[in-house]
Image 1 (spheres, rainbow, N blue to C red):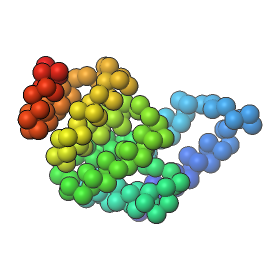
Image 2: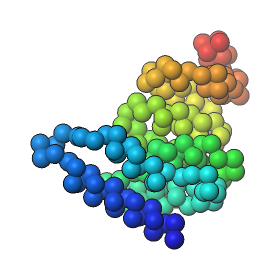
Image 3: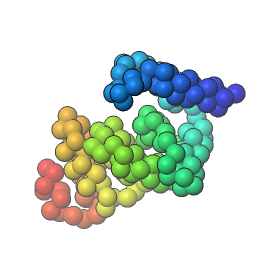
Length: 167
């Protein structure tokens, strides 16, 4: 039942965008878009297995047809913050984040989620470059937690130069 409501919400969002779009192609009503996008995001009632299902469906859709729309970044945020997610879901989420970043380079929300996902999937070699992209996109995201992730990855990789650079 929940999937049908989400599908209905997506269709309503698309219809609202088509109706509200001006004929010259300029965007309008970005505040209304942000409010209407909230029902498509996972909430506290979504279990880790439900999040894994959403990511799996989105990943299969991406691999079968890359021109399909990607899930909203809030799904990646929810997966990165969920306590019990299988490693395969992390890998699929990282691939979805990479696809999102190809379309929207420098999106700090997705970059921060990718940093956490890389850490949780034990891909320590990729964390420093993800951290650098995150800081380049939004220096406000250079939080203590982000520094802990990048320092921990440098320590696990025995990269003393990176440890000194981030200290």
